[in-house]
Length: 596
Image 1 (cartoon, rainbow, N blue to C red):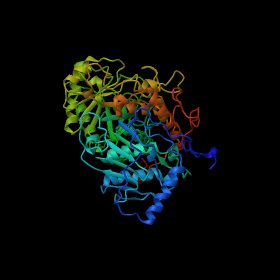
Image 2 (image 1 turned 90 degrees about the vertical axis):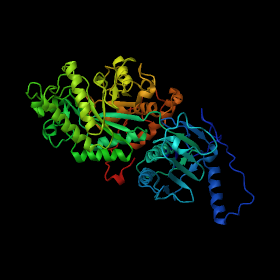
Image 3 (image 1 turned 135 degrees about the vertical axis):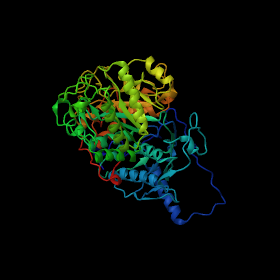
Image 4 (image 1 turned 45 degrees about the vertical axis):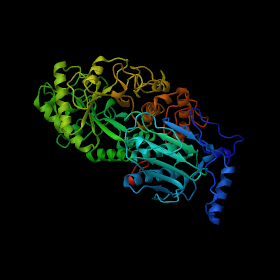
């Protein structure tokens, strides 16, 4: 292979110096265990195999990615420069005999096969423990404080429901976790430790090296998500699945779908068919709109679940309902159908809070959506109902929270629902731009938890800079550093860290019309929000993050993903300086063929 055709991040010439130690990491003892003189002599074939591997290790350069070059930053990284692993062509993926764990192993194999060209069969995790192994072990639990360092293996139970341990030796890569979700997060870390060429959709001649050492990792917050507004502009199933892939790549575990608004109703409800037939036929700017059938929505939920992403459906109530009122005027305060709305103003529409037909409608809709949604959350919106009197609004929210509880779900709403009576477990999604909100703080004192989505930090529809071609600036400009440089645990006065369920990055789509534009606004800011939700606060460092993030540019470009080449990130010279032209998005088929 000529240097001109070398994939980004794949070295072809051995370096003249060893790989430097990584800042903040603790090197392992490279000498390994002592030789036991009483051990039996190895067979000739084993000796030949070991000699061949040792020769390769002596001649090969170190892995082109350092063990700590991971986004989000892991809790603990212990590099061992003497233990790099090279994936052989005859490697197998070995896995615990558990169907959910095997499914993660199938996803790993499907991820690696296109670029490597290797068959990578998935087999039971039996000796010898060479190649790639995914091991379920222990029971998830909550161990306080950081996972302790030490020479012995860490108790897997201390990693909780999403943590994992990654061990890389010259002979094997092992991912250990208490749950399949933890295994999948470990797979995403392994993906980042391979050369960027692993994202290529066809075989590449490369050395598939993984840097040696140990990573022990688990999330800071339980809820880490992004929101996609499919109401202002409609996006088909394939686009939503592509967004789920981006979330899973960075260990985000919730996709909030804003399914209804003035401009369109996007989810079929059997008892109210005109919601999609009439209310779903418009969007901002007058386009054709669209809606998800029940089968479409099930496909999204299933695809997400396989990647351990929970779908959070939002039915925005009692405001943002023009599309519903156009379809069913009896729900309007004056009983008159408003014309379809294709603009971008807010706050003018609302359901009649004094009519019992309204609550029958709400119960039917939330009941059907809940039945289609296996996750625990049901989002009722609640924002910008400007024309509803405060007392009537509070009664509506209290009653709607009861309807949600009757479905067996936990209610989530924008922080405007805070003044309403408390419901067990309820969650407020805070999108303010200041540091104090006494009303939300009081709701927290009454037992509410908070998802933080500050408009001036986490709103991905804000422009990066004044010349960004799409987006808004009402909450300010949000470049990558501004998206990264805040702490969810201390951001909102009167809300202690233990009341913060997590973080979410919303993408409203008044000005976003295509998958390429979705990706342009998500990346590279989405990984910044992902690191805030996953990584320990002590790892928070802008200089480190921008360096680690820069290595993802070649990965996105290789995968045909559109992104904004933010000038504050030191991208490699292989990253185009203009807006990349994406390849067509892959069209997922049956669940067993989906890529992670």
